[in-house]
Image 1 (spheres, rainbow, N blue to C red):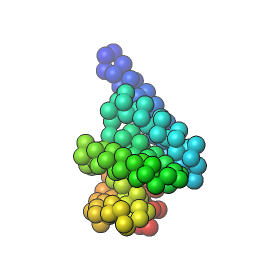
Image 2 (image 1 turned 180 degrees about the vertical axis):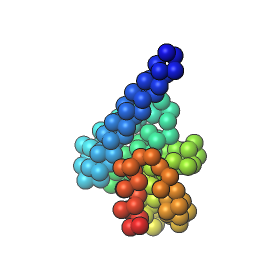
Image 3 (image 1 turned 120 degrees about the vertical axis):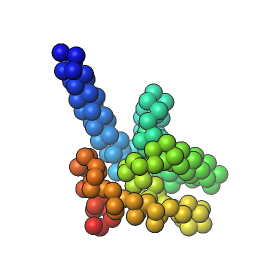
Image 4 (image 1 turned 30 degrees about the horizontal axis):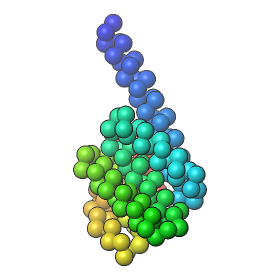
Length: 152
């Protein structure tokens, strides 16, 4: 009976996490074009990260900051958002270096960041890692997205 209860709790937790990731992924898709979506992504991922300390939410928070750097008008504010995003992204990857989704977020960010900012050192490393490892994920949505992004 205890095993069944534990299994049920794990399944519910996994389902809730999956639904939660879909919401964050939707905000990622709209955040670059919508300042409102970028702010929502920051708010939700900050709350999730503070309560769970899971690196994936630090990655989402980082991307939200990168989006806000794009939306900000003031150059000082732009750099502030960008630097905070960069720091959060690297923290997330230090905590969970094998996380495909965080690696993908960093890859996309580095490929799109202006070269003058110098945030482009891990492009080859991330691209290579994702190419080798994407087949091993159980997350079908992520697998498809990586495959399409890398044009595999």
